[in-house]
Amino acid sequence: MSANPVVKIYVATHKQFEMPTQSTIYCPVLGGASLYPDLDFGYQKDNVGENISEKKEWYNELSVLYWAWKNSDADIKGLCHYRRFFYTSDTSIAGKYILDRQSIIDSLREYDIILPVPYIHKGISVYDAYSRSGKGLQADLDLAREIVGEMYPAYMPAFDTVMKRDWASLCNALVARKDVFDQYAEWLFSVLFELEGRISFEHRDAQQIRVMGFLGERLLNIWVEHHRLRVKYYRLHRTDVPKNLSYYIHIAAEKAGLYKLFHMGRYYIEKQAEQQ
Image (cartoon, rainbow, N blue to C red; front, side, top):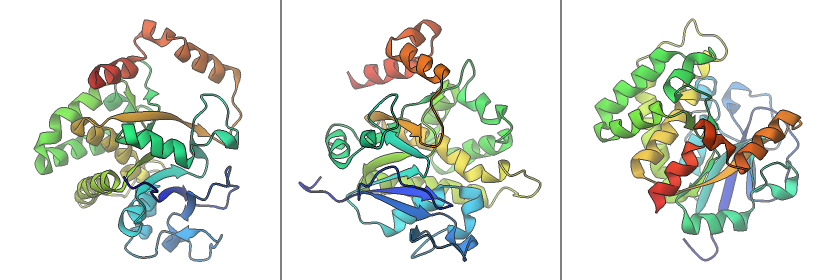
């Protein structure tokens, strides 16, 4: 990494919003700009240069990830959402706690990638949770496994390991050096483009049609597991909802280590063991 790296975190959005930070490292990108030709908020559009803007309904925020892969030469690249940002605070969503340039640089001197603190699926596996809410179709996840097995058989142990866990980093949010970011994107889209040619997008509801975005969330964890990357976790807070009492109880329990009593803090234990 250079002494003064260029850092750009691309903020995927489909509408105008108020940026919670004035930091110049954050760049709003209008996802699916080809689908909304009349929208112009002064943001970067994802239909400039090499892009998959017209596929945004299937790929969700991944159309912005693709754009950043193909069109950004920043030394450090990342993706977050218009209402989900990485924070250095466990509880506060004040703008001053949004992950800043120096914290990113310092983290990536010691770690390979920055990911959201994992979401814990209470009592069920990542595999079973995929369709539990009705948002995903289990057949899509099974097909993704089949394709990974065909294209990248060495990844199968990582695929199955991640699917058996009850936790995963979600939302396709990440920050990494350009080489890591680009290598991941190349692998991810090779799998998703193959998948795209094998499924039908007909007869899906508004959530199920976002299949590529949903699968991307799981594939990121698989790629990280396969490469045994050193992960720095930061909280991915939503900026558009107030934090209620149950949220703060959750945070307090986690900080006190109480989730270990219920086998719900394993990702910390596993990651610490891996890095020793």
